Each structure stands twice: as C-alpha cells, then as structure tokens.
Amino acid sequence: MAKSGKSQFAILGMLGLLKKSSGYDLKKHMESSTQYFWKETFSSIYPVLEELEEQKLIVKIEKKAKNNRKRNDYILTSKGETVLKNWLMQPVEPMQIRNELMLKLFFGNMVSVEVNIEHLEKQKKELKKKLSIYQEIKHELSDMPTSESLYSLLTLDHGIRQVLSSLEWCDNAIKTLKSVKK
Amino acid sequence: MAKSGKSQFAILGMLGLLKKSSGYDLKKHMESSTQYFWKETFSSIYPVLEELEEQKLIVKIEKKAKNNRKRNDYILTSKGETVLKNWLMQPVEPMQIRNELMLKLFFGNMVSVEVNIEHLEKQKKELKKKLSIYQEIKHELSDMPTSESLYSLLTLDHGIRQVLSSLEWCDNAIKTLKSVKK
DNA sequence: ATGGGCATGTAAGGAGTTACATGATTCA
DNA sequence: TGAATCATGTAACTCCTTACATGCCCAT
Image 1 (spheres, helix red, strand yellow):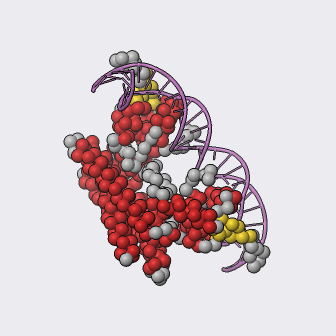
Image 2 (cartoon, chains in turn yellow, blue, red, orange):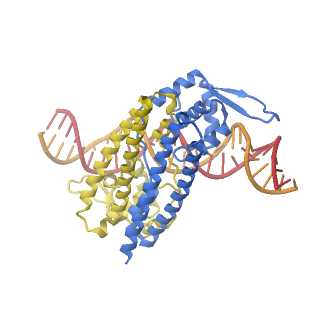
Image 3 (cartoon, protein in one colour):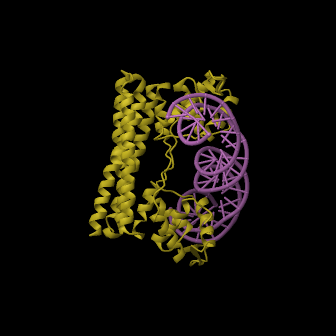
C-alpha cells in the first residue's frame, strides 16, 4: 500500500461520491464542499491519481471529450471501494493542530495591545467571510433530499458552529483587550 | 533568515516568556501551556535551537548543573527579541486545516451509520478529556496576577469554547444519526 | 487577440515526523 | 537493579507545497 498519506483517501472518497470524475473536477468539487476542512492541490491530485491507478484502486477512462480535448476520467474499482470503506471504518487518528493566531496571542505580552487587537479584527473578518460561504452551501444543500445531504449537513453544521463560537470568542477577546488598554 | 518555518518562532517566543531555558524545558513548558494549539518535538527543537544560535538570535549558556549533568540553557539576544516581535506583528497566515473526522463523516454514506456514530463517540471522549485538562490549566492560571496571565487566559478560553462547541455538535450529530437509524 | 477557465502534469524543496541512539540520575 | 525522568541529539523519510511548464478553447 506504500503511500500512507491521507490525500489518497480524500480522492478515493470524492470519487466514491461522484462516481466518475477527472482530477480537475475532483478539485472543483472539493472547493465547493470540503474546502473548509480538506483541500487538495493539482500537484497532489494528479500523481496520487496515477498511483491509485497503478494499485488498481481506480481505472482511467481516457475519453477525448467532444472537442477531442484531453480529459481523463476515473472511476472506483471494487478493490478501491473496499480500501476506502476499510479506511472509513478505522478510528480517526489524532491530528496535530497548529494555530498561528493562538501562538501569536500567547506571546501577546511582547507587543502592544493594539497589535493583538488587529490580529483579532482580521480574524473576525475572515470568519465572517467563511460564515457566509457556509450559509451559501447550506442553502444549496437544502434543495437536495435529506438522505443524500445528511453527512454534508453534519460536517457543514460543525463548520458553522465552530465559526460562530470563534466569532463570539473574538468579540470577547477584543473587549477584554480594549478594557485593559484603558 | 533562511528557515521560514514557524517552529523557530514558537521557540523564540517561549524563550521570551521563560527568559532562560533548555531545549528540554522548552518542551515541558509547551506541554503544559500551548499543547492544545502548538507542539514541538525534541527532533525539531534541538536543531532549531542550534540554528537560532548561529543566527545570533539566542545565546547558549553551557552550564554543568550541580551534578555536572549536561544542560544547555538559552536566552534571547536583543536581535532575537527584535525578530520575534517583528513576527508577532506580522499578520497571521491562513492555515490549511485538515480534519480527518470531518472527511470520514463527509463520506459517511459509504459505511454504516454505526461506524459514524462510533467515530463521534470516540471524539466526544477525547473532547471531554481535553476539557478537563483545560480546566485544570485554568485553575492554575487563576493563581497568577491577571496582567501576566491575560494572554494565556485568552487562548485558553478559545480552546474551551472550541471544545464546548464541538461537544454540542457531537451530541447533536449522534442524535441525528440515531434517529436516522430507526 | 487576449485573458480567463479548462486540463494535466513535473521538479525541487521544505518543514516536520518517526525511528534510532546514548547516557546520567533518581527513586522505589 | 530496574524503571522513570532528565537531557541531547542524528538520520531517514514522507508528505505536501511552491513554482514551473504547457496548451487548448471560449467569450469579449
């Protein structure tokens, strides 16, 4: 099985959902669904796709689309499905989190209060942007039958709660820092 | 400046807080303070320490402690302090998040509901463990004067809110999945 | 005709992780 | 005397990221 990276499972999983897709579309789909907890770049997608094919977990369907434009579609093999399902059943490995904002704030005493407030304001802006993206996705999902969107909704809900909670914390932290300034 | 990794700043920052410390103690301190958003391993600490010394950002104080036991203490130079403060003032770079639980859940349709519930239960357990650690740290911090613990409390508060929100989400998700099962 | 989206890749590098290696001290 | 903690390091590796490279199609 060689490669132990998680990218392969992200790709296998997306292929399981989409049934058939090109590397390009795989990425597009991730951008509009998993992007807030999982991203892949083309530079990882294409080599992994090749490797998965070698291992017979997926098969390539080279079809010259209408305009004989190059486009490689892939589909899961039953072996690939087995490997994917097996991974899905394995316990989640604890991830190492690295949060730069927290690190900077933790050392906040070494710079002015204003600097820290600025970091927080910037964070707030980004969180709000995220939130509106999530809400948009949620809107789109509401058109689908629940059975199909069940798990998307669950993960999305996590994202929304996370953002909401972070936003509250930001406001609180800013308030605290502003009161210290005086 | 060569190395662009963040480890150096974590180390510089901890040295700024502790004033003087060995690689070993640096790690110990991180384990009891920043571990929920930042960790370093010995294998990264020692080489980085060496590199920082080369760049004159820190100085080594080789002192054979009492029992002539090897122990290298380091302190920040003023150049190191400048570099650290400069980094602290730079905007936080967006981090790429990879959440394996979310990824597995997103593909949850491909396995049984029970598997997904199990993942969530395991997550709950871990979150509760985290929460009790955080609360312990909070307790310890309450002995310190607020001015010194201000930023520790802010980051800790973030951790606590995050965990609480995740815990709520877990309960909700489990409830949803259990209702689907029937 | 040119800029943006479609579409696929290669090459090099970097930062950090895992595994390995060593040895003194302290406590039970 | 043996396990746990203190204490420092090296080597290999791995996965991912950044930068580079190419070329077609379509709309304005």
